[in-house]
Length: 323
Image (cartoon, rainbow, N blue to C red; front, side):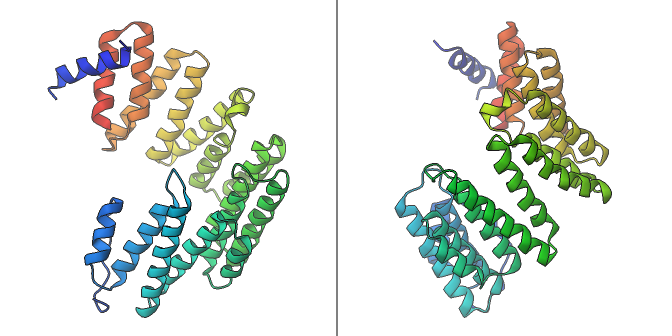
């Protein structure tokens, strides 16, 4: 009987276990059936526009993409756009156009999406350029033509964000170019782009932005490239962790530490890994966050492999409670 099943059994035994209506902030975690019911029963107000946009995004981002789900995304985006126009709700109209552009990009309708960009806000125009670039890198796209097209769109996003003075999207446009080069086995060129953002953050004394940039750099290597660049990834995650700790960004610190712990596991350094992962759990607990699943599951595996069944089971129980 598999050991995970046995431990689960033991764990269970031990645990006993209207148009003029004002829009309101939406709860974040509606399921798709709940959203469909809300749309059918709701008033024709801006909240309904947001529900329609959430439905469109749900179908657009389904893990198992199909023609039917893409068509559904387009239908709901169109409904959201039409209602938004009736209500003169420009943010909803803009988001509906952006999501329509995403559908065109997924369908391979690059020219349709580009034509739509002229009617978008600055931020949505940049986001759509980035989506068009990412779409060129999907499996099945021609290489290197797909990579050249992706680079074109990422550079377009950078020009647009420069013109609008939107730093977040300036950085994101550079990150996407850097990721493209790193995953295309042009690591020095990709790292150089990341270091441009890092240097700008250092000049501005923006430790939060610098920490995020180091993290994104470390996280940009493909699984095939991670063996070769393990030392660099460890250094970059460590830089991110140190900066996050200096500014008391516990979420970023925990994310960096979690990855450091996984690298130490890969290197066979179980003691260091255990220390890292326990620190992640402590940070999450102190912040009142319950999403320590990956750290607890890794601690369970470490103790199981050491033969410490009691500690392994204790971590498994904590893992189950964190789900």
